[in-house]
Amino acid sequence: MSASFNSVVILGNVVRDPDVRFTPQGVQVADVSIALNHTWKDESGTKREEVTYVDCVFWSKLAEIAGKYLKKGSQVLISGRLHQDSWIDKQSGQTRRKIVVVVEFEGRDSIRHLDVARRLVLEFLQILRLFIRMKRPLDDFLAEFLIVLDFHTRNGHAPLPF
Image 1 (cartoon, rainbow, N blue to C red):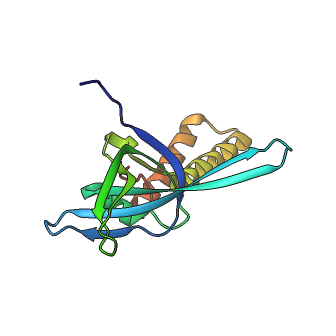
Image 2: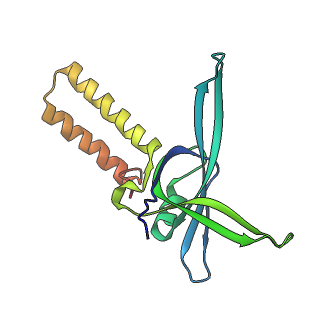
Image 3: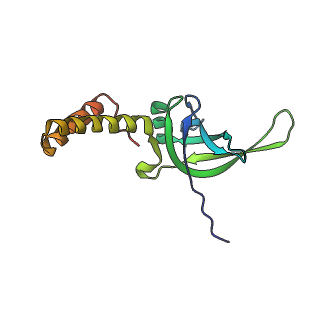
């Protein structure tokens, strides 16, 4: 048997709020569709754009996290593996197939909710600019940013569990 490598990393926007449900065995599952935008210039120099929609499946704790934090329009970076779903079409009786991304837990790198990360970085930079203008010591800056981070943590904004 030859070796293979099945790993996917995508960055895109959530198309609609996650569809979260439970299997008959009680395992939580979330289906999320991600829009991936690709732009290029054609031979005439005209800007072109295409959107590819990728269905992603989150299981167990990752499904809970996706349901809680991902919303329509959120920018997200995920990693996982390709999986081919197959089923029998009830109307035609034919076998149907679809490729999906199964999001897998790989430490803290499986899901990144970039909207929250972007907000924290902007706050970090605003505080840093203020301290530079005021010519205050870097230690004071770090202490102040930790207070902001603690505020977000207490209000459920950050750090996220992914």
